[in-house]
Length: 150
Image 1 (cartoon, rainbow, N blue to C red):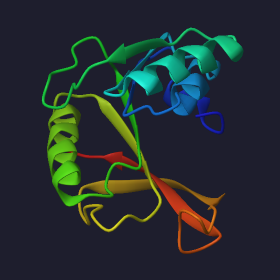
Image 2: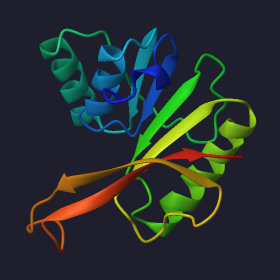
Image 3: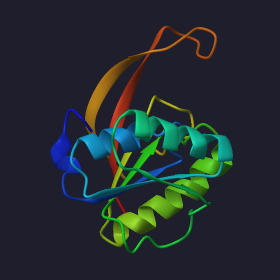
Image 4: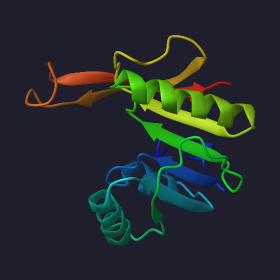
């Protein structure tokens, strides 16, 4: 988001499965009109609120499962690393494709997970991301930012 602020500038943004809120915060810093960070974990919601405050940006943290729901008040959906389990990847990707069909811009970052679909994705950028051998099988991952198509 910080490398390409034009993707979210002036937009109503939703950071799906937001974790600590990192991408939501970057979208707010890049000039999004509003940012919601959605999570199903109460600890993540607390972390998002704290991290947004510490970074001096407004992010609304929402504890709710929104998969399958229409997003009528959102222009751009940001998603990171959700294709690590087959059932989740299938469920989330079907919803994201439906949202793209409704005209929303869907941007998804993925570090090469097994269940990433092979079609309907347009690569926008690639980043080499350092990792730890305690969590991954290598010291870096080449992560791609994709635009999801209907």
